[in-house]
Image 1 (cartoon, rainbow, N blue to C red):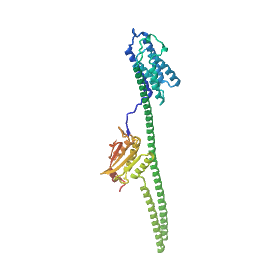
Image 2 (cartoon, rainbow, N blue to C red; image 1 turned 90 degrees about the vertical axis):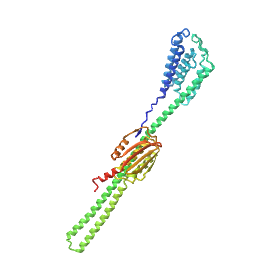
Image 3 (cartoon, helix red, strand yellow; image 1 turned 120 degrees about the vertical axis):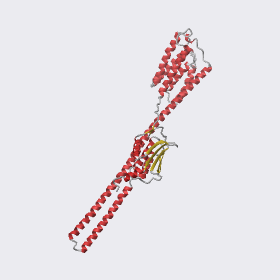
Image 4 (spheres, rainbow, N blue to C red; image 1 turned 30 degrees about the vertical axis):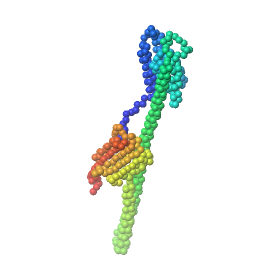
Length: 428
């Protein structure tokens, strides 16, 4: 089972800054149209509009190139050209808190996108002071017909210009820093998910390996005992047959010899029976020691805790040590699937597994303290579990736990197991 969440579409920081600069340039052009119109007048001659349009287009090109540039020399050259064009654009405009501010904000945003943390903190106040001082055209630029209507900025306008420019710069820095931290956190989460997935696969492989090793060891022990029974019975029965043949060949003429041979045959049979019983007892012990039921479940709990660090508590309630038939295997798979999902999808640190026989059914509840799930997607594990349990007439319910985390509840009727045993053709 998996948690379905809407995929995050993280917009790159460079794209956000580019959009921000384009919006500022568009606002500056819009404010120019609103304040000055788009056709020459007696107050604003053709040269005024021509100068603004040419340098505004050049300035916009400089900002776009500055945003895309990756070479230090190219960045420095574009900064110099952009600052020069910005000074020329403001040479004939009185709009200190509108058009000039928008153009200055665009330049600041483009330059800040290239400053690393924490050096970018120095740029807003330095640029804001410089831009505020340059609002009054320097004397070395001289005067012409474009500057006859210029009104020097007031102290309040300069302070407001500085404050707005500086505030916007620090807000952009905060946004950039947040975006960097978010990208780093996203990368770490993705790395953590990958690690958890690999750890889960490793844990499942380790469980399978441990179970396979135990089964192989039990199988070898049974083969050894079977060979021992074969050797014992073969040796004893061969001796008995040989002695009985000798007794038959003698014709039982001597009662004393016949009695002695019968006593010896009985001794050999008794010894063979004793050795066979010992071997069968060992064979039965190997079957009892085979991991089934709760024994197998506690074993995978131990392996899971040691490999993942997740705490697992098992409450077996009134459950017997093991069941006959398929139920033991299904209970084992339910616990295995529950533990895997708690770690892989819920990122849980604590899991509780509760067993209880209620009436004629056994109930298993797997609870964890993980993140829960917005929507359940039936993966291969859950689908396979439901298929096995449905054959036994059971039910599977997966949901968020009331106290937080995730809860898997499985109910399996026991009468199905009894019917399977009674209907078995191998039961006499």
